[in-house]
Length: 407
Image (cartoon, rainbow, N blue to C red; front, side, top):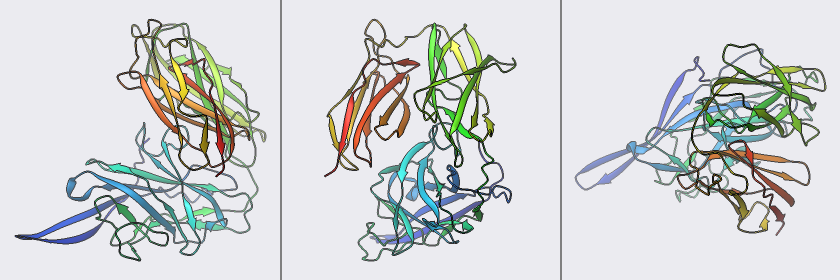
């Protein structure tokens, strides 16, 4: 849900272009949606999805633009491997506001530049529409904490060391396709957030339904595969995940999910759809330390009519069988059809791959008018990855294998 207690701070970087007949001003506006501060919310070892920065970027002069590169700094005591293991950049995808893993669009991990104490993302190509681009930066806490640390992120004032208008390592700020880079003054989150060295793990896992989202509609059918992931907030693994699916207003009815991962890194539940109507879904999970968590309910409506995905008629394929690690990526093509071979538009498709080391990657998008989706599949680790697609609750029969190789 949207944070309701936030302070908005508007900062601009202003550039003057001298034109024939007058002077033109262009601005890069950053509106800071302040991260809520809770003195009781202490970050501990191996926690993730800890929101550190929430900002909306508006384009120059109301025109479309593209964010090419972004750097941030922590003006408090934590830095890479001193409290912080990773920083992840996200954009809004479904519900407004930060949702993190399983819901928001994961843009990628930051690169650490130790010479300038700066994290940066380069070659982003993120569209900045007239309505603004809302981005989030989350923190993954390291395991080997040696001291208490603090986080207060800032987008630093523009520093373009060689004045070429493009980001180079050591530069600071945000760089745009238009060249109207910024900001002129640092955009600083007001909240100071604490990372503590305590060993206590008192939080249950984060568990998420990844192929259905709040407000979705599905077509009535006999069975629908609900899928998701779970990860413990701390040093323990998920022990189990249960799901409750009931008509609105009814009491919870917890059922066990199945998994092919020891830590429930991905799980499944075959729902026998009882009929038309609106249903509430929520999850309950427990880690090995007996800490439990229960999610807020999402609402799903089962409607009549419309096409049902055919596993036999649909297709999952790759344009290559090998791809360079962290280099030119392979494209996964998904074509979704019904039993008569007709393309199905606006169907949720979850693409998942599992690497040899057990790592699970997931993303869910919707098909276009031709029933098609194309994903770029990338990895920073070499080895085989087996792909699976679950389209509108139906698992496709193909499971192509992609081999990630080093240079």
